[in-house]
Amino acid sequence: MLKRFLLVIFIFTAVFSLSANDKHSLSVDYVSQYVWRGINVMPDDVAAIQPSYTYNFDNKWYLNFWSSFALEQRDLYKDADELDFKLGYIFNKGEAIQVECAYMVILFCSVDHFTVKDSTTNAAYVKVTANDLALTPSFAVHYDFNRGSGAYFELAVNKAFKLNRSIGLNLFSSIGYNYKQFIDTQGFSDIVAGVSLPINLKKLSITPFVKYIYSPLDAIRAMNGGEKDDFMFGITLQII
Image: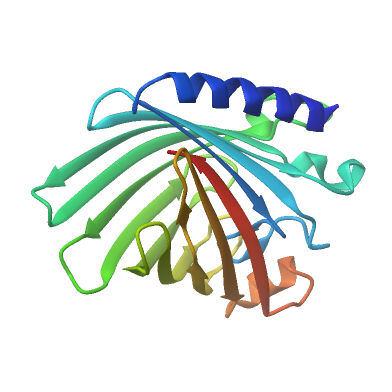
């Protein structure tokens, strides 16, 4: 039932986006496992599908709908399904600096007894990106107001190369610091290094990627069944 529902939504939104203008953006990720800030959300390395739709009101304001659904062991992991609503604002200072602010409402939409208090959470973040350096660094601060009730800080760098007219190569890395967000302690929670290969066709971008994730924090390792590191891979399909 879930797969049929996702297929219908994907086809409908894809057709709508193709017939619309650049105010609409649609993408779908397949990931071998859902790792969020060092936490393996489904510890049995269960794959997930993660559709995303964005409507741009103008060059600054946007509305995004993002979701994640387990593709295996539904009886065990359906409670990890997410539906996120995000309202964001982007400010550019010339071509050098970009500041993004957003507020999110996150619903754990497949739990058996859904309540607003226990099955949703609210979060906000601010992200600053420097676009005019050899590497593209960014720094983000995230805060969860409800279930997570804590802060997360992320420093990231990205380097994009163009191999030819249609194929690129992106190298990226990040380090995250968790201050009591879904855990009772604080510390460096995840170190990530990865590579992606965007391939642009006429109306579709196909981007395979792979990530290595290392978790220095004992509290995160405990949530991951004692595992200190992991590899994940995936592929992104995006209508362009």
